[in-house]
Image (tube, rainbow, N blue to C red):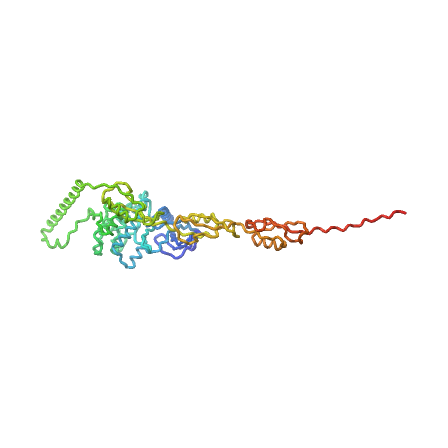
Length: 555
């Protein structure tokens, strides 16, 4: 734990939210922007370890460029020095909600449909991160949050690494990364992980959301890892009969031992998850590993004579094989004799989902998964689609769309009493624009912000304009003509001016009275500038003439 309560002269630490294997997370207040944030600090006992420090820095690099509605945003990074130790920290989006781990620990049971919806949010985040070349490697309930409005946020890319660096020694046999209960078989064997390792972990996560327990448990980490590598999970529906066959199929495909048999992308799995949530057939079919035997019901074996059991099993397997050939042949004939119709995908941009469904149905297409992201386009209108407009697609294709959630929101920062340049910089950092600048007479320094509209703390759309009132830096020059020098000097200094006194000879006013001033009374002058006053000085007295003595004539 750090002793200082303020990091970077900006982030005031509040309560400890939690701690993981290498870091502590605090709720904090960003004093500059006036908002709550979460600050993740490398544990002080690990800050001296170069390996942990590099790992923490890798997290910062991985997260800094990520921006997605289902990924916890990173706002800032820094290094705090304490007791001659440099302690790096991350400043992240503060999520008002709970982790799936805490939710599961309450004993509350999720409905299967809600479990599938949450999983779809996790997969949306992974689809984005995989496109950025980043594998999470530690998907688990503790790293998934639900906001109070039900949004899914994936956090802690603590052992994430660019896909291009997949051969790094961190995935060699000497090091097993991730958490045992959600570890893919290849990670358990110490092999390199790829995006499909995240798919496996999501399968484990969905399993636990559906059944309230992880797929494999054991007394030791080694025993759990062994099960991931060698054993198949019990289908979720055998634990909870309310779990559908479609959900079973999704889980078992995601958790296939062979990565080639899993979903190959997060988008592919997400599509099936949404289908299962809607009660539609999924595209995935359960995959049998090479070591997996075809299940035979015990009652069937028990009812057959012992000498004929093997023969009966053989006929049963033969029947399955014949059925497979028939079904496969039917699909082949259909594909050869009844080729699918190709249509042009319509442009859905600007439409609502209801309008899009109508347009798509006219083309024989369907509306696929829907996501949202901030945009300057009207809320709940389509801003992006896949396949793209005017491209060719087979009838029955599901078109994925992204809806606008409206402009992103931000908070007007505290800019009153700051210079205009500093205020402009803070507004820019908050995604806002500096609007009109109205000068106002004030004794504050010139160009200092006196007011903002909207005021600080107001939630506004990103890109909004903030108008300001600034100090003109000039004040009204008081009229000190006719005042004594002492009174005039006091009045001018009280108004913020310096005073220069000059004298003039005059008999029009009494000596010591101000007869002129510059700048003139009623005008504007910069605060701190000099006002010259001219004070009447008495004329010197006229000397009395001395009589010239008269010299008497000599008699």
